[in-house]
Structure formats: structure tokens, C-alpha cells
Length: 613
Image 1 (cartoon, helix red, strand yellow):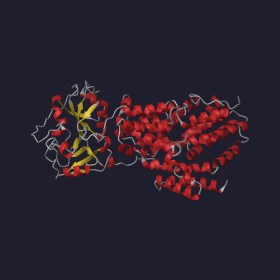
Image 2 (tube, one colour):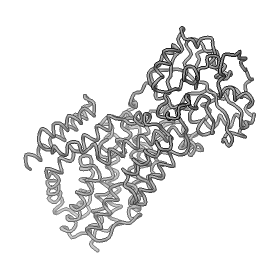
Image 3 (cartoon, helix red, strand yellow):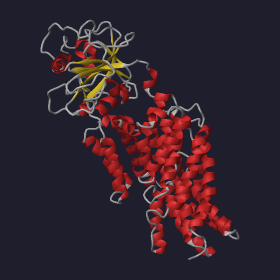
Image 4 (cartoon, helix red, strand yellow):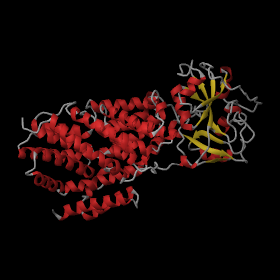
């Protein structure tokens, strides 16, 4: 072993030790490792920042953005609605969500399957009190094992097919991996259904300002548009769309709606409407208005699913040069000095005079607000959601004496939500499955499509990305690449040949798979296949065995990185939302890795005989 190779292995060892210690932030450790690699000379200067342009970084960032858009749309919630009432405990949630993720991953890219299912897990966690950490890592592992079933499910399968074509002239086909992959899926699903209990119970996702506030429920005003999915429903059926999280506190007659949508030009007396509470059997008609009460996220999803128009969501200015990116939703408290106190938004001509519209009100000590938003007499201490131009919002809040709360990422009133995010993601996955686009370009194009379709704004996209995880991944790619650049992989190949000489063929196959598993966290799975594939084939030839089972062993081992958050983008994707530490992955991943080896080696040997053809 040369000095450079020793330095590369040593640098990676120290980096992993610091991760396991947990004393310093992961992104800081990764950046320090990158700088150390450059100073030691094992990371070339011209490759120091290649990680920030790597496809894996783009895939993870784009998947976070798409996952956020899918979560806001409520599409997955609609699909899973028949089973969600039964998912009340972690013992049921984990196997069901893992199985659903695994099934989707068989026919799409595994990271795409995880991006589709993550919003559902986060919603269930919030509603049932189950820690996200109990669900997200099992789902990540399920996505990885589901991906090994087909050619398009995971990058190692795709790359290994090409390696086999270069070595033998014939690539692996779409379902060549299925006999082994399906067996692995059964073993993995049975394990995570029970093994999730090995995860630490105190983990919480990345902190947000949402946790700092206990505002209570908001009341919003919405209108049933022509063609709305809610038209013809009963009140009980509409509330059931949100699993009872949103309540209809009042129904406004259709003839009363227009004045609220078009604010009066001047002051005029307003007589507040106080409708009776609606009967659960009352059927809704197009044109009617609804006063809805619930948490902002639940309100937003119901408005999207039912096809409702939110009062105050229209443009707050006639300037045609403004678009959705220019608008901002701010949560604030009405102070005692505010001109809003004792007056109504309509009387104040809030939109035309101050350039903001009222989206929602939360009031302590009052369980039901049945007045229309334009006719509510606001009080000191009311919490309001105001929407206006970002450039003028600070001045407007100052004029209104509304004290803004810390930014909570309020999505209510920030544009249209629909099935579009899920449709865009599915389209991207189809393009990848057909081989028309690589996954990085497909995911990047999906994000651009979301902007173009005005499903979300660029500001919301930036907020959705977990930047410390992105920095962690980008900084470690050139550090792990140092092992390959210095010839460390050749050293590993020599060790492998020496280790299996004289061993039975089944033992040589086992060592090959274990080594592929061990190398993947340092090279990433794609690099592992590219490096280990030819080595495994050469080893098989030297032992007088068929190369196919050894290529399969490398593909399965490279796809089964359950030990770290850095070897596979699925694990990286759940690290922040799950609040996981570096060492948490081994708690669940090490037993699963052992099971994959114990089940995978016999399955490969059975379906892909070791004897040469």
C-alpha cells in the first residue's frame, strides 16, 4: 500500500469516526474532510468541488422539492385513503408503508418511490403521534430492496447490465433480477415489520419553527367552484376527506359571496352573518361558500382535494408584471395598537388600501367563527394569515401594527395544488424507465416543470431542500473518490483474490457480496458496480466458475447499503426528516445486511448456477 492510499483510507476512517462520535455537525465534518483531503494531496484540486455537480446531489435535492410538492397536493393521501383509517399505530404503519414503498420501487427508481411515499408517512406521524424516525428508515430500506427486483429499480442493476454486456456480449434483461430480488423483498419486509423497534425512540426530525408555536386552529372562507369535487357532497362527506381534521362551521349562501370576493371601494356598514351550524347531512351546491376550521396543512389539502377557491387567494395587485413568486404569506399577531382592532377587513378596504388580503384567522377561546372573513371584527391577540407582495409586506405589516411571527413555511394560499406534482413525478419516472433520460436530468426537469406549471414557487423550493444534507453529500463524494483515484480499489481487488483462493465456490460468492456491501458506503453504489463488476468477473474466471452469479452478488451487495446515510440517496433523503444520527443506520441496517447475505447467496446460487455454462 502506497502513502497516498494509506492517507485516503485513513482520512475516510477518521471521517467515519467523527460521524459516529456525533460531537460535530455532519456537514461541518464533511467539509473538514474535503479540505483535509485537498491539503493531504489525495483529493486533486480540480476534483475538490465535483461533488456539488454530481448527479446524486441533484437527485436528492430534486427529490426533496418534489416530495414537498406531492405532500402539499394531498394526492398520495387520496390514494391511500381506504387504508389510512386503519394505520393508527407504528406496528401497522411501518409494514404497510414499507410494503407500499417496496411495490412502487419495483417499477420506478427507488428514490422516486421513496419521494412519493414520504409525505404520507409525515402526515401519519403528525396525526397519530408516531415518530417519523420509526417509519422513514424502514421505508428507505424497503425502497432499496424493492429496487433490486427489476432492471430500472436501482442504479446498480442498470450499470451491472451494461458491465455484463461488455464482458459477455449479453446484458441482463428487465426481470432477470426478479427471482432473487423478490426473495430478498420478502425477507426485508418481514424484518422491518418487527425490526423498526431497534431504532432509538427519541429521534426527532430537523427542527422547524412550527414546533415553537401552538397557535390553534384557523378559520378560512372558501367557495365551491363549478365542477368542484365537493359539489353534491354532504357536509359529513367533505369533512371525511380530511379524516375529520377540518370542520365546516358555516355555509354561506351563493348570493352573499361576490361582495366578499370584490372588496367595496369605501366604508359602509356591515351586518355580520351568523349562520346556524350546518347539519352533517346537508348537501353542498356549486357557488356556496364554506367557513372551514382546522390546521393550515389540513385546510390546504382539503381545499386542493375538494377543488375549492380560497377567499383572498387572488392577486392583490393589478400589476401584470407580478407573479406567484412575488407573493408572500405571513403569519402575524394583531397588536392592541392595530387599526384592525374592532374593525372588519371590508371596512378597512384591506386589499385596495394596504395591498394585503386576509386568508385565515385564529382566535383563542372561540371554537367556531361563522362570520365571513370580510365581516369579522378583529381583536387584539388574533393570529392572522395575510397574503401580499413580498416587497411591500414589511411596510404593510408596520402600517397595520401586525407583529409577524417567525417564518413557518405557511403554504396556505400560495397557489394551486392538484394531482400535478404526482403526475410530474410519474412522468419523470416513466422517462427514466424507458431509458430516454437519466434520473438526474429527469428529476431536474420535474422541478422545472413544477415551476412552469406554477405548482410551487422558487422560494418554496429552496425552503424544501435540506441544505446540510446536500453539503454533506457533495463534500464526501470527492473524499470517497480518493480511494479510487489513489488505486485503493486495486488493493481491495488483490485482497479479494487472496481471500477466496482455496475456498469453496459458495464461500467465494459470499465474500464477493460482503465486500461489495462494505465498499459501497465509500464509493457509492454506482462506483462499486463499475469497480467491483470486472473484478468479480475476473475472479469467477480464475476460479473456473460462471461470471453471472458473481455479477449478481455485486449488484445485490451494492444495492444493499443499509449501514450509512451516505452510500445511497434513499438513506440520505430520510436523514434530516427522521432526525437520524450516523450510527442509527447500523442498528437496523446491520441485521438486515446479514439477512440479505444469508438469503441472497443461496438464492443467487440456485437461480444462477455457479458451474460454467
